[in-house]
Image (cartoon, rainbow, N blue to C red; front, top):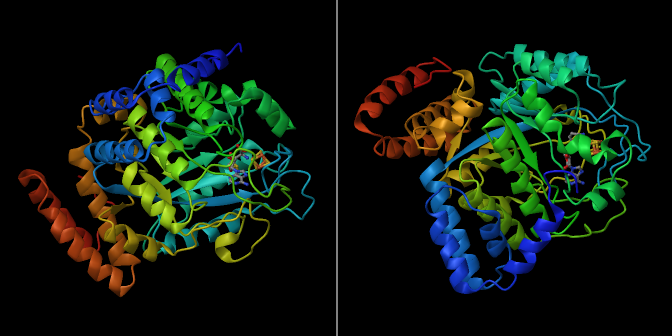
Length: 455
Ligand code: SAM
Ligand code: SF4
């Protein structure tokens, strides 16, 4: 294959590591504790384990690395589907062009209405989603949607970071996205296995190379936070994880910064998709294994999990590696205003934001709506240079707690507010003394009505 995805090498690694012993796996766990990432060969060893004891050790190692780097924080966001018009016919997707149902593209007023609903739930981050359609969803429309979201304010809040998931495009379009002030540009390869990719796609997205090099284009247009992902269920997950890491290494080599985030979506049933289950469907345990391996292989990369997964699966995943998650999501344009028009796929976790936050606290997680890094320019290489030595820590916990207090003051129900304020009190004592003083002053100001304060 003429790309940086080296099919032969992946197969060689998987073949060689199939015979890996317990001792080999334990050596990899030890190496992972250095928090400097893993070699592909080491990842191969972990991908091949299935023994219950080793799997538990894998989860424990991932939990430890996650806690040392991210603490117990979990950042929340909401997806906003702007348009389900799409000219591609991806076999697995409810928006595929062969699904001849009526389509919906939000007007700019409807985008503002959806944004208000999202703000009123308590969210501060949005991920916007579009089908690929040069006539219905040209880049000008995407930019108008972004501007409309940023300029929508309610009495209590606003969206502070807009991440974008649009089809692969060219450098000019990416430069426009960058000028519009986007957070992360996310695009999933879906499957790195080229023959499978070719079978599952038709339309402009069927160009494997266009998809694979989209993040290169985005970087060259000045975007420095990009997100990668695989849609699990399309091909063998072992192959996909190694290929994904090759992609991450390629970005690091070329742009001195790897992916800011990696998403771990599993295929879900969708309207007009004939599959009863995905061709390479993976179990919950395999999904957790993938998350744990990515956490060890790329310790400083955010891992995103959506509401495609059930509440219970999500809670298990939060502990071992996920650092960002959507909550109370809708996957159709107009979904938050109850205009349900063609969902992209079915959602499993339908909990409200308040209920998700309550479950997170019971688990010992810290809900965060923080956008501080992005707002003070700590993105791309700058972010990684702080994150790698662990320097980001001293800002993260207090900033997370300030945004959590905003949520508690403005949006939480009484029970969650009481529980949350007690929870913050307990966490304050874990702060360094100097940080604690500055934090307590700002916390008081937030409680008195000031907003968007950073440490
Ligand atoms: N249309 C753009 C694209 O395909 O890149 C952007 C966003 S698309 C709305 C977001 C992602 O949803 C896709 O990249 C795909 O991985 C995922 N997806 C599509 N169909 C799905 C399904 N049935 N179950 C779970 N995820 C799905
Ligand atoms: Fe369109 Fe994206 Fe769905 Fe493919 S995955 S049909 S490109 S919306």
